[in-house]
Image (cartoon, rainbow, N blue to C red):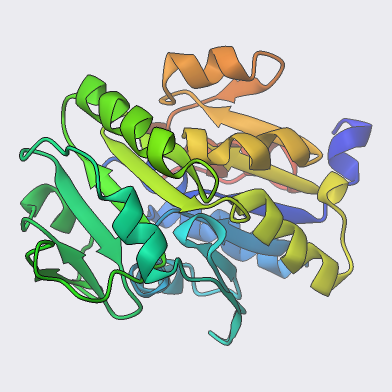
Length: 277
């Protein structure tokens, strides 16, 4: 083990495209590795763009204590599900952001506390949840009164359409919002103060660790700060080429289909090898 990895006390992982396989599930092998991490007293943090209700249903399957950073940093929950931090976008900020021309084919979602409000029910988005813990609610944005939200989310198979939308919203609301493409087909807007890395640092301060003592795994542009600021950042093999080019000094590991996170942890951090069965 390199001296840098010897100093690692905290493991931070994104979910989709990273800890989860292409079927959006945690494999038995990954679960066994994370249970061994817990047995060896590593602090575990999951940092995701997903809503906390959705993400909690997933991380429960690890059966170990996990800090949850969700909605790209707008929520932090302790391992016992206590809310430690919450930030919401004000209704007027969201309303202003949506006051641009939006292609009618684009799915628009407002992350609320208990439901996600959307202009269309998307089976593709629903497929990200094995059990529908975080339910969609069909709304007409022309008649909606309360636009307050945790974050704003857009989805479309054509990345370029989302780029055009991103530019229009930033031209209108850049003083309040920043954006990230969690996937080329998923565009998200958060308050300028919100980022996974900021939230992770809050967790580490609470537990008495530094970012230098953390290793992080990610595959999306909402992971850039996290991957850059932790002691060791690792990019998934399945990440977009542009992310790898953006962070050229970072190591690229196996894909999420190959249990890349668990295999790296097993071979480079834990003191024992795990057989992949």
